[in-house]
Image (spheres, rainbow, N blue to C red):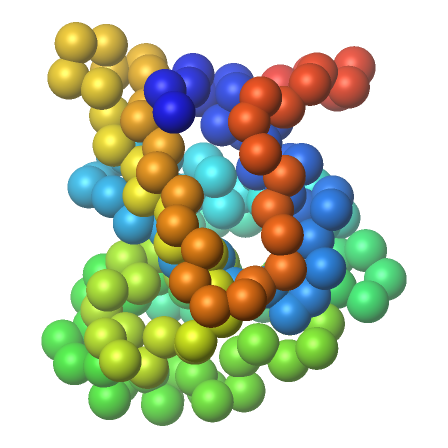
Length: 157
């Protein structure tokens, strides 16, 4: 599916609004593909207020969302081996109230959960304002809303 950034944001908010934890989303793609944009939108839809910066240097941020939801946002770009995940509390992720957003999930190798969504984002070469989105369901994660996402009167940021 080819989407604009505004459509990607609407979809992300829709994911956050309808999220049924535990939910694990792996966000893959090259630098600048929109992984953090999508993660911020999911967090916003899940009820996170305030800034949601990329965890590139901190590696992991936790946010309180609406009642019963905690958003965990990780960026694994700087990891050199999957074993480094244990220092981040990897084994605790995916608790019954967690929405886990992992940028650069391939860095986790075989430690990725069996039930997850893998979302791959790619800038379109002919138009950098567009993104190609590929979504793959692995195992039996809770469902995600699909495209297109209807505008619900919320301004797109």
